[in-house]
Image (tube, rainbow, N blue to C red):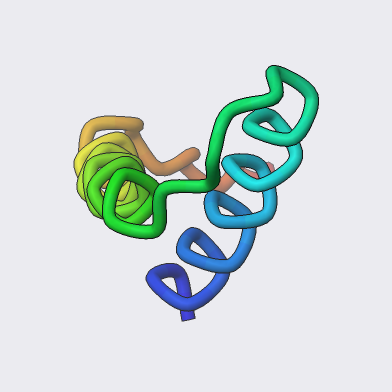
Length: 57
C-alpha cells in the first residue's frame, strides 16, 4: 500500500508543480521520484526505534 500511495501522491505533486511552472509533465521523472521516496520511507521505517511499552507497577 505504501508503494501505491507514494506513486499516487508523487504523480499528483509532479503534475501540480509542473503546471505551476509552465513545464510539461514528465511521467518517468515522477516514477523515479516515487521510487526514491518509497525506498526512503521503508528505510526510515526500519531506522526509527519502536516505542517500548510503559511498565505498570
